[in-house]
Length: 262
DNA sequence: TGACTTGTTCAAAT
DNA sequence: GATTTGAACAAGTC
Image 1 (tube, chains in turn orange, brown, purple):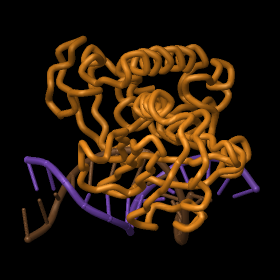
Image 2 (cartoon, chains in turn purple, blue, yellow):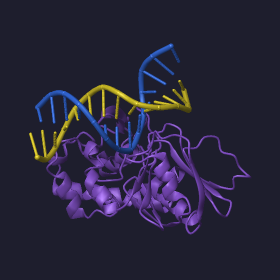
Image 3 (cartoon, chains in turn green, purple, orange):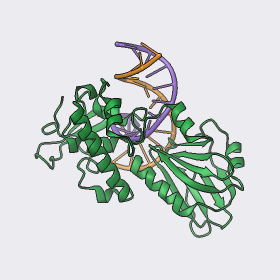
Image 4 (tube, chains in turn red, cyan, orange):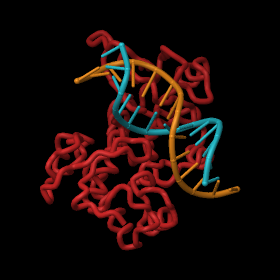
């Protein structure tokens, strides 16, 4: 599922393939994923425009337009991007198809259509208005502690809340808390500042490493609970059995033997 | 067949 | 008013 590292990888992909080319045409297969905009607006904003740079905040990708504003993409659960030559490859379903004057195309697909597409004038205003927290890769230790230490909700729920910290999703939150030996149900305000600092450190380490390997999950197998998500597996640390619980409405896995509940 | 999955939002409860 | 909870959304997989 696209969490921060996957979206960062999509950002690099767009930066490597799609900048500096004039957009000759666009096609939108559905208006279902549009946010505060219409198909006509998207088409008009993109046609004859040029992507000039990319930016990411949390799980949101922004592609700057030469003329005005940014195209914003959110990948939901199943969003994907493909840059290709239309005459060579014919992908099945698409949500937004962007054709460039050099003959290539960038295709945004999302089988479950839980993603979002929008036109955003100013990124900072967008983030502020919607109330998203600081990006998980750049948040300072101090800021992290201040945002979490008074929350009464489970630490896992807090980590996943994009309005507190933007970028961490279900799977990475489990991996982060396992590394820190903290039980996901521990209320955030029961943790000491020292413990929160450790969680902050683990979060940065895992996310940075995941970004470094382009979110290739196969190269992240050493982070327990990231790829192997099943109750009853032997814990790699203490040989206890991993447990399953729904936390914050999401399926969560953890080791009840070595992740302490505070 | 239907239960389960996820990121996000919204409405309701505290 | 701020914070928290839980349902809803969609559609693919098992």
